[in-house]
Length: 306
Image (cartoon, rainbow, N blue to C red; front, side, top):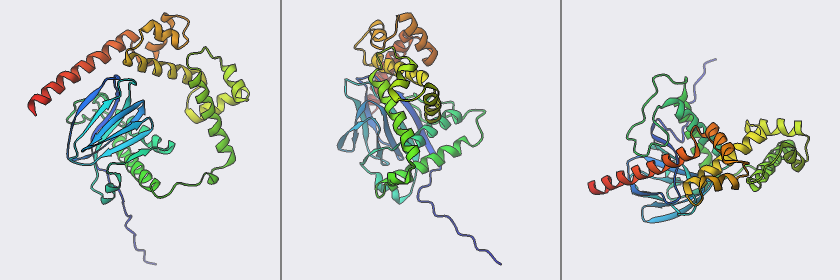
């Protein structure tokens, strides 16, 4: 028998990438704007941001994404209240299907957020350029990197685009999910919401297990299988992430933030902060302010050049 091959159709093809960023901005951050000849998207991981595309402005909230088409002027501005965390990726894709994304704000599903996390993870393996470098004309490859990490960035980007394009027409019914998987997901969501609501408290693991209505061993295995972390480690990271936002917003001093998040002492807070972030709260505060001042200076240079 003679076989004939079928060429697979590619709706989206991403072979070039210009930037991969994860930014933690201050509450008063403002990017005065630019335009370039490639596609770019901005995703709000925390907080909210005002994004301008051409002559239109959009309020992007946590979990939402917006695309900027090639040669479209765009800028960003924090709301002056909440310090936002943003993912920004610039890439080349010449598919006609990209027209779908023009001036759309899209709320991402959990699976789509996973594609974003893959892009960030693999970019940190592939490139030595800092993810929070504001002005970067070209990504610098690492001398040694994990096998296939650049291809995985391309694959994850294409998967993200396909999923987002499909979501405009069709969302799979929840009835296709097994009851056990729904219960597991709902339990983890309920636990994480409970942790958020009690972020300023000194919770014990037994308190969380009691809330979930599970034995401690069941909760431990269920939560770790879903998140990859233990409950209390997740809670500690959540507290420190909240502390970083409060520091960047600048409304409270370090001692006040320590008390607000339920730490027994500022020394314990500082030690835990340094374990997770790699620098003390004071060092983090200074680094954020220095970065912000550098951005303002560079904007001044750009404005004069323009």
